[in-house]
Length: 353
Image (cartoon, rainbow, N blue to C red):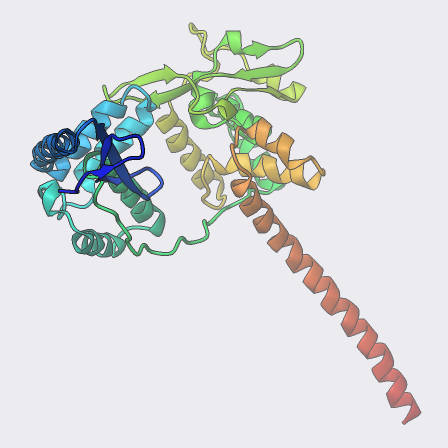
């Protein structure tokens, strides 16, 4: 136990190590009293209570800590995130879950990460480790992880062409899927946002769609309507007139698209198969719109607001993909120009010879 030191005021103070703070630095707690004995008693009492509490927490298994963490956070997380966390607790790091928190070591975590990296993408491994770190920070703050994680890989993006979009639209005229595709390709709505749209969200006079809710699969195993995950999800999107004309409620409901997110995905892929288009995601329709706006010279800030993106990282990937296609055209043009130039001078040299 640390010894008390006399202060200039005449009081006595004891400082004891109190773990790691949120910034990863050592934290200390001070106890001041009129006498040395009193100060040291207060410090000893605090240390004993903390040790008892820590012993109780460390008796939990990691699986129990995950469950408790999710329960504590459930009121501040979206239903989708809660569901993903519960799946993670059942699926990720099976070697660690039965261990008591007091038995969790950096070596054990690194071993579990190495095993998971063998059959999961780097992004999945990094997400799983992020949740593990959050759980340990709450229930075992003295454990400081310094895990070597797999390097992130560049996401494979597909940006549909204008011709592909038009071919797809023509093939599904008169269906509920058509409305879903128009909203994504020309308004950058996500499928969860499309499925939550109702008549009250449409302003036909000004051709505006108000995005302010989403349909998600809840832990209760049913589709529910919730608010967007972030402020960026709330937005007003001005639509082309031809899109607004198609946005009429499904029969007998106030919903604009009478589908659920998984059904949209299933119908979408079947439609691609039927007309022989390359397989890409429904979500990639949003990339199509972003690429068109970028080509028009629309500022990134507005593209982000229209699409409900919080950062421009996705936009940069889309632009890189688009520019790589454009680069092929430019490179071909460069090669053609040099070829013509060389042949002209080559013919000149042959003539002089």
